[in-house]
Structures are given as structure tokens and as C-alpha cells.
Length: 228
Image (cartoon, rainbow, N blue to C red):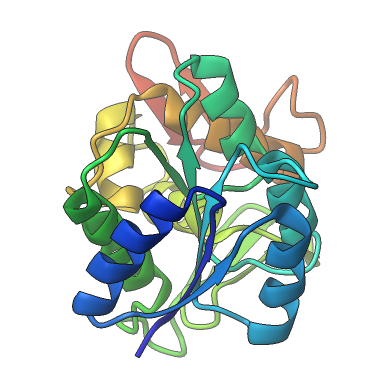
């Protein structure tokens, strides 16, 4: 039974989300503020964190940033903020997905299942290695190196890099990348991919401002450069 940590201070939302998640087969624990959320995340090692941005004691963005220093657990943000920049900040801090309040609890369950399905995907063989230039990506162990140096990637960042690396030179639209790494349950805006690409470049590129690997194809999307 997948373990979900819900970090949310509004009891009405807690009761609703918990009921739907438990009915869908999840084991749910609840933290009512950011500091308690961090403690529970360390102690309970959940399979998924559902994180509100507006929390007492510690803002959800700070919670996300702190979790990402030591864990790649999938994170779905809950936010009442509608500004695009707020969503992008959360994604750039390492969140895998977001959902805006008010939301359908059924949609949240679908997003949770999609994120966990990707996290638990077991279709790769132990020899399923992808190499492009100095990049080496192991789909079985979900690890990546650049010139032999390990790179810490979130689940979404890893899936995005693997999708691009499997077909060097192929141009993917943002919509295609959204579907490939977040699934057909996702109905977000395409700028989400830009945030994840920015994170990837910061981690794998010698100079993110002049990327060697991930190239922007203006007006279309992105590709991984061949022959680097």
C-alpha cells in the first residue's frame, strides 16, 4: 500500500483528500505545518508527498527545498496561488507536479497514481543504459552521470532526460514531453516543461547559458544534441 504524506493545514481539505486517497488504496499520514511535515518526511519515508504551499511555521516552498536536499520522493504541490511564476518556482525547486485549489479530489488521486506509476516503473532491464556524449543514463537504477560524475535528479527530471536521450536529435514539443513524463492525467500548462529543462541544464550542462546537451528548438520544443 503506497504511503502518502499530506502536508496541509486546512482541515476540510485534509478530511476530503484523506478520504479519497484511502478509498483509492493509499495509506495517508497528515502534517498540519511545515516543520511537522519535514519531521514526518524524514521519519516515515513516504512514497509520495502532497504539499500545500501556504503553511504555518514554514512555507511550502521551503519545505520542498529542504526535502529535495536529501530525497527524490515525488512531490505534488497544492496551491491557491494562480500566478504562473509561483508554480514555476515550485517546479524549479524540485516538485514533480502541482494542482491548483479548488481542485477535484478525483483529479488529485489520478495525479498521485500517475506520479507513483512513473516512480515504480519496472520495465527497464539491468543493461538498459543510454549514452550520449558524456551522459550515461541507467534506466534500471534510475541514475545518471555526466563525464563519470553522478548527478542527483528528481524523478521527473530523470524521466525527461531519459526521454530525450533515447532519441538524440529528435525534436519533442512541450506537449509531447508533458505526456511522456507526466502522463495523460496531467492537464498543466506547457511552461512546466521549461522549468524542468532549466533544472536539468543547471545540473548537467557545463554552462547552462550555452547548453551543450539540451537544445531549444525555437517555436517547437527541445532535443538532445547528437554527437556531443
